[in-house]
Length: 278
Image (cartoon, rainbow, N blue to C red; front, side, top):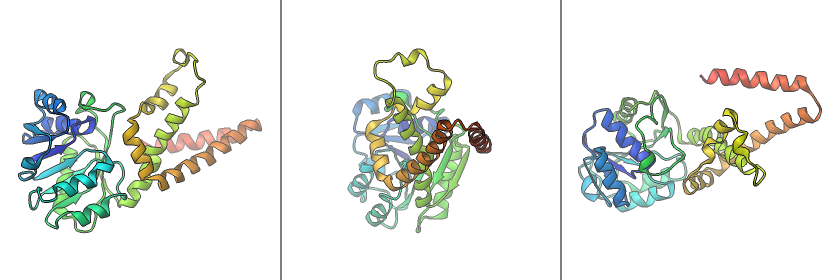
């Protein structure tokens, strides 16, 4: 199988590393940064690389797009005539509904785009921070659409499991974006707000423990990517923020009123809910 990865940043690079470890030998890379391509070849995670990709797409059985959301539609538009007939395209984009319809209208009918989302990532960007460990035990989501062939969906599922994902789920694009607004984008919102709410100039680093460290890890954020993700899924994210604010207000009210009984109730509820996640 010939696999082409477009975008060899932290996620695309991690895909290349994980595919190599899983025994996929014909992996090619496309990236606008020549130095990234050189690093990928030096690491032995791609067989060859180039900055445009046309020559690879014509032979690719699977193309993995690991690029920013706003680039996906333009990229597909520019290369729609280059993809091999009968080939499969998938992506690693954190939101779906903003571009699925456009891509379906652009692509020839003999190209199958199976939309996917690896629920794993890193705070840093670039191939230097890629690792084949990032997918180990993580969740992978596929959002099938009308027209996807079952064998192609199963192929993506098989590859995801082969490279280390523990669980693969199929859900609608709408449910995906709703859940991602809550499980991914809301936590990033909270981490950014927590870090930025600190008093300027304090020696906070001398006082932090695991709780602050864990809660703020994702505040070290790729600002360009996450700005796109937030705005591209604003309806679902705003709903999640509003629900969170309601719960925060209830806790704040209990503190104002010295209401220990209510706080204990909230803490017990959260503990039980957290235990169920594992």
